[in-house]
Length: 160
Image (cartoon, rainbow, N blue to C red; front, side):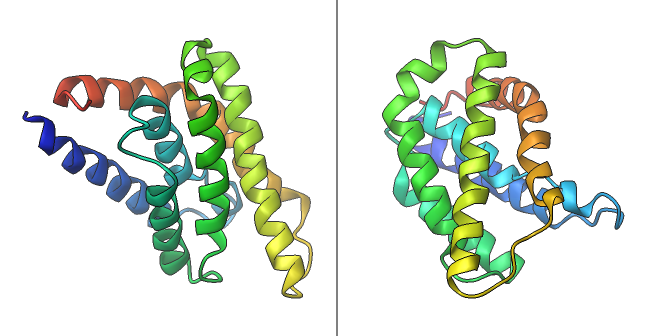
């Protein structure tokens, strides 16, 4: 694959994350849906920071806002903040073992939720229940598998 085609792989991975975001879950599991788009975003920000940055994070968040019919810009702002932190620390994060990376992912996903709670509070929406904090935990548990899968895809298609 030529270097210019790496964008297609990155775009396809985000499309798969959006599909996973929309897949219907049973009512009891709907509150535990991981932030697939954020996990894919974190991987690409760490792996190819020269290609995926704050701008892509903003666009990915706008896409999620549109798909979930949430306040336009809510996910975009939260993802841009998290992507900025990943970009600033990507050289350090990449050398950590997956267990330590997962803890960083927990902090980042919790930050995304915290920003969203702050925005919702600012516009007068009620504070969510404690189950609102379950997706960051699920995302943290999934991070090692997401990382290994995405690394395999990146290496297979030669995304640099």
